[in-house]
Length: 332
Image (cartoon, rainbow, N blue to C red; front, side):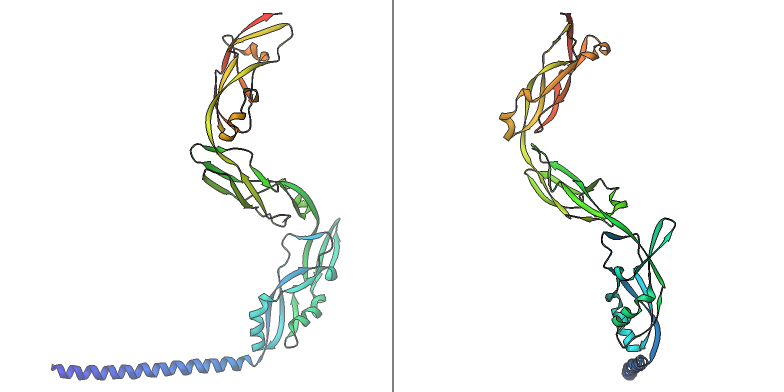
């Protein structure tokens, strides 16, 4: 087939495709325009429909708080022109129905337990005003909203930090971890408050510490409970340390007056880590090591176990020796 003939055929095909694309664009344009006109025409008609509105509870009785899961939405059957309904549907989520509990709350009794509820027909006038004159309110669903109220209680509780800390080599915690405040006041339903003994902070991980740390820690929220403070300030002192060995005398506990216990050795070597700022203040009398005479009946090979029962807060015990001492009992 001649190549010029192929070119002519291709040109005819391209022109036909261009005309088709042009017609398609024109068709889509008029389709969109006609759809908009049809939609606007429909919006000019009146319709009845149901709209869901969120509920906002206000003016709770003094000393009371909502508990459980009170209804959060109310269904309104309304009638209005289409464009008004469209606008209202778009704004309904941002226009909660305000319920004044002091004004509308009713109460009945089932046995000894009171039951609180709101009859929604009593809300009609207020809702009508909120909707405006362009919307006709035809009905409200449900006809009754059941809510549960409880007395508010206050309680002071301790704050417990939840931290994980590790230190660079030759560094250690040099004092007590502190929180400010150490206690907070919580308030909420008495049935909930009575079960709470402490409030915890959110977890924090502190890695490779080589200096003191001050951090603001958020508290873990508790459902239906208010805190007097939502955060606390954590202070953790950190210093460089050195290793030291201290000779600590061993004392006797529970020794009868008519005997004397002699034992060897009379001192133990306590190996511990101490921060540099406390190095020169560390004294053997700050430690207490004892043997218990009442345990002699359980001892083996004339040996008593040494117990290190106290040490300064600013040292970390590594080890001590010996763990046992040999003894001799003499009558007085």
